[in-house]
Image (tube, rainbow, N blue to C red):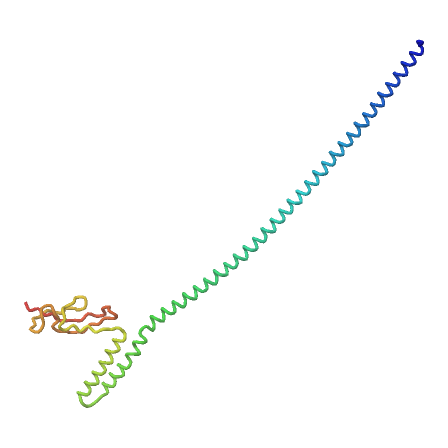
Length: 220
């Protein structure tokens, strides 16, 4: 082979190699560009997905906040209605208590004012009988009988109202019910016993109204 041919072949090989290298570089650049473009698309897609997720979360939070406000408003309205009902109940109870207090005070006042009404009604026949006795004329004995009947009506009236007569003649002296006016010897009664009743006493339903005034026997 001549030197000229060898140089030509060598030039052809070098040119081919350089051409292949350039082609490879262009291919690599193309792949790198495609890879870069793909990577950019992925980044954009990821960013878009993140924005969408953020929007969804924001919308969900807004819904939760709105729902909570509605629930709080509903609970507040319910509480206000309940409070108004309770207040109305308190007002009604207060009015009932005031009315009950007024009725009770009126009843107590009437009880004090008319406590003796029934007693007076029972005493009226006694007064009528006394007037008839005072107007009576004639036999003294009959007048005494009329007075005795009046006394009986009066005693029955007292008994109806729980008034008991204390007439302790011959009974042992009781300082709770009797008031000793004096002590005197007595052949008829034992020592410490009532020998004479100067004034009868009275009790009202067991409570002393007036003690009996008595004389007490003392023989020693």
